[in-house]
Image (tube, rainbow, N blue to C red; front, top):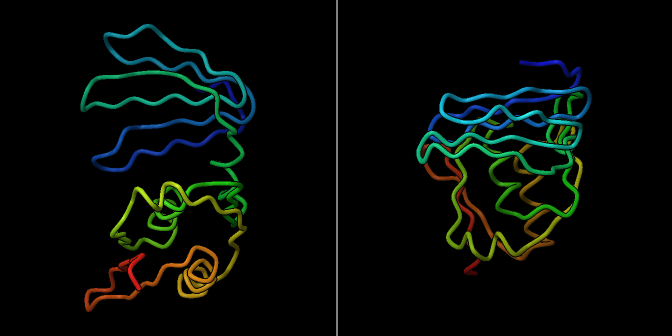
Amino acid sequence: QVVGTRFTVTAYESEPVRAYLEEGCIKASVKGHDELTLLPDQAVVFNPADNSFKAFAENAADHTVWTGGKMEFVNKSLSDIIESLEHWYCISISCNDMQKASAIRLSMVIRHETIDEILGAMCQIADFSYFVDSEGNIKISFER
């Protein structure tokens, strides 16, 4: 139940459902769990795979900024950025070392840049390479 005025919900196949509240209030409920009430800068996640349902503190603006036609990352892990880029550009991106990608932190704003422009800039900063396979999938590698 949405009582809020600024929020976003992500519900991708095979991933937990998440809601991020920037303004107002959200009342979230799932059968078998107590109702959760979210306040600004809180999120809720429901994972049907293990039936977990929890709320946590989160800067909601990080997840709603895309509604203004841009993506903004402040000290985010490369692995989180990769996931966001996949959804933003509707492409598949894989990485040969997600543990290393999780340890790399980046900040950037993306407006109208192409995926090649973004990955080219990130390669310079994070010291990785990438290539696009014959099916259009992007492969990131930390091995040079």
